[in-house]
Image (cartoon, rainbow, N blue to C red; front, side, top):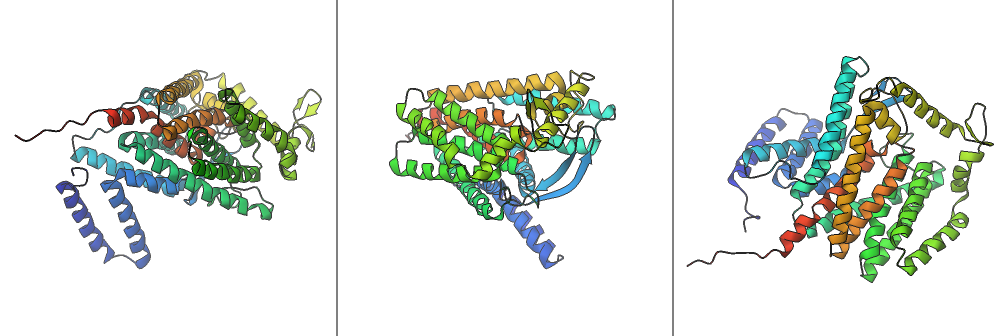
Length: 460
């Protein structure tokens, strides 16, 4: 009864906002008025039900337009693009509503305690400190550094939203189901791009697109689906999950992303390593390894082969007698540039955006935040792994156990993906990643609340 009641403060605030909206609409053009109404509805949903706003966020993760607001040149190779997306705005609205509700209702906790709260704080503090030092030294533009740091906070904000507002295992199932439904839509969209001959990318990514980003996202969701598939016993649901894995695999091949192929290969090895006591799973993995080289489209084989046997233009890096392709050579040289320059500020690096580009997560962390940032990042990943594994071992619910194993598999795959991409700062990958991390971190609390006896006062 209490959960369904509308608090008087909510009614008052919503009424005031509605009155302000009605007054504003009389002074606005139809286009602006429509935008304001949509914004008001989002605020209304976020303020009255943060769990409901989580579903809005899931829908916007890869289905929201991305607007480039400028490019940032700096030291290194290439340049950074600063972009704004619908889910950026949505997160800002939800965050503001969350803060207001916390102020109004003193009984609400701003942030629940989890085992990875402190590692997150340590990592973010080092990012902020390194960037401030970089600004003082003239290596970082203040506004650019501020906005990129804000984006880093945004990824973790998704985690804290989940931790604070998911209260039942039914919500966990519904949120993951929504996440998989969005992935299915994205996969179909990617497959539809195959006839064009272009590398597949997610919707609303401009003319060039980001196939590597889509590939990383697909591999992570594939890990979640695999984990759930391994533990659910329902035949019809497992058939649906198997079909979803097939659709995701086709979409992944269409990206022609070598970093994503590497991550997918590591994912398969991780599954085999964790399922060695299940002969049926091992037999299936072995069959896939045998069949895949023959079943893959020609363009996928060519994409993999060109890494070592591609056309040489002169100046490419050679490993023994094998010459790497131009793209791989440029990536390795950007790493070399960062590592050579890193020795001048080894402890805290040059600050976030102190380098223009280094297409590898670990080189980027080392260049921007130094050894301190790299150690903090490793600490965060290790703590997340350990607690997710503990929750996986303790969990009895098949779906939640599968989700926990899926996160573990996905974490390993994303660490591999980070060799050739800035995986852990890409919003289209990190939003679903930290959403699932938050769901796994709350499982022990949900289990204890579900099994604890409910005490009620009996009126005399």
